[in-house]
Amino acid sequence: MESSQNEKLARFLTSRSHYSPGNRVVKARAFMPHDEELSVFCVAGLPYSDIVALGDNLNLPPQRRLHGHAILGEKQVIDKDLSVARDDSPPRHANIRGWPPEKHQRLAIAQDLAAAADLFVHSA
Image 1 (cartoon, rainbow, N blue to C red):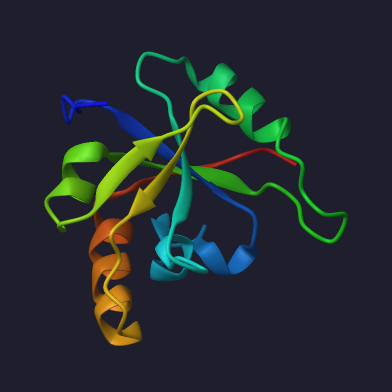
Image 2 (image 1 turned 90 degrees about the vertical axis):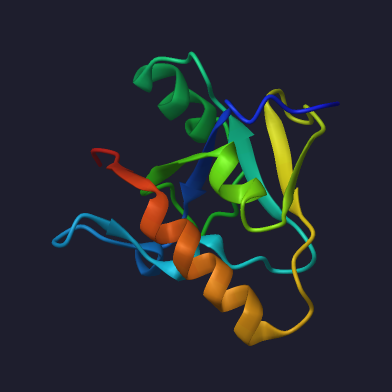
């Protein structure tokens, strides 16, 4: 699917190490891919409550909980020579692909994406 680059992407934060509530910033760790892809959700046009509901419906393991989400523009991802591949499994789901193989390069990209993202901490 061709992108308009206007999509807003939500990265759900499932670890306290993904953000700093005191500084109101998203940390690079939130955008570090575990393998070759990073899971996000396409949320353009959704109100805050619907984004929270998407996160609440994640099938998280019992030891993880949803802390909040980070919102990033698809353009920031594409500007880093990455791509967004929507698969809608579950609905609105996509993966950020095209990560370089070297960890230091991935970290540099993750730092830039985190700096560009807006943090939303969910109430407990």
